[in-house]
Image (cartoon, rainbow, N blue to C red; front, side, top):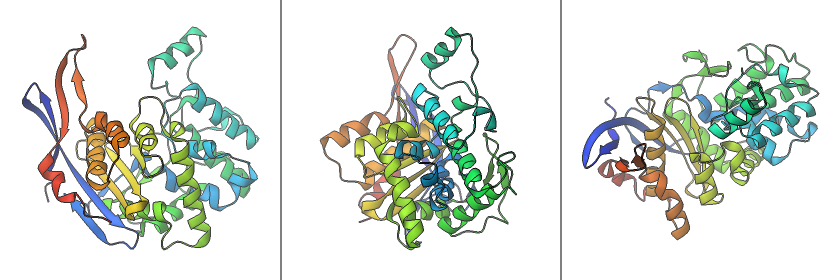
Length: 342
C-alpha cells in the first residue's frame, strides 16, 4: 500500500515538496478507530516511546526509592534541548542514584540551541553526556539498575536486566511480541525494535486511559502522563513542538516525537492513542501531521486554537525574514478524521 501525501510545502503559491505518511488511531481495547496509509508495516518508533521505556522505573519502586520528583520523571521521558535546566536535572537524577555523568552511555551531544552552545564555548568546555537529549532517560535506566542490584555498566545492551524489563513493558503495552521484529540500535545506543504503527497507537491509548492494565501499571501510566503534561518543558524545551502543544492543551493531550518522523500521542478524553510516521523522516512534516490530527480530533477553545496555529501551518522565511512559503496539511486527507472519536 502506498502512503498518501499528507503534507505539502509551498514556495509562494506553488507546491514545491510533498511528504507522505501513515497514521494509526487505536482505542484502548485495540480497536482501530481510523488509519491512513500502511499502518501495519513495522517502523522503528525511536524516542516516541520513551514514556513506555520509563514504566519499569516507576513500577519497580525505583522512582520512589530514589525520590524522583515529577519533573525528573518527565525528563526520563524526554528528548530535551540540553538547556541548563535539563542538564542540571539529569545530574541530580544521577546523584540520587549515587552516580556521576561518566556512568551515562548515551554519548556526548551539543545542545540544540545556539545560545546553549555558546555558553559552553564561553567556558572553554565541551558538551558531555548530560547534554545528550536522552540523558534523562539514561539517568532513569541507571537508577533502575541500581535499585534492581544490576550492573550499571552495559545497561544499554539488549541482554541487560534493565533492557529486558523495558522490552517486556513495551510488549505488554503494545500487545506485540518484539522477538521476531527487526532490532536496531538507537542514536543513544539502546536497542530499538520495529513495530506496526497500530501497536504503538494501542500502547498510547492505554498510556492515556489506563484501561486494560493492572492496578500497578495503571497507576504508573497515570503518574508518567501527569508528570509529562504538567512539566512539559522538561520533555523537550524552548520552541519545541511537544512542549508547546502540551502546554497549550493543559493536560488534554500527551505528544512525543521520535527521530525519523515518528510521533505518538494520547488523547484520554477520546480514549485513543495515535502513532504516525512521516515516510521520508522529515520532522517538519511529522509535526504538521500531528498538529492536523489534534486539530481534527479535539474541540478547541480560542487559546488552544491560537496555540496550535503556528504548528498547523508553519510559515517559511528566508534569511532576511521575508515570508517565502508555508507548510500545510493536505485538507482532504485529514477531513475524514474529524469527529471520528468520542
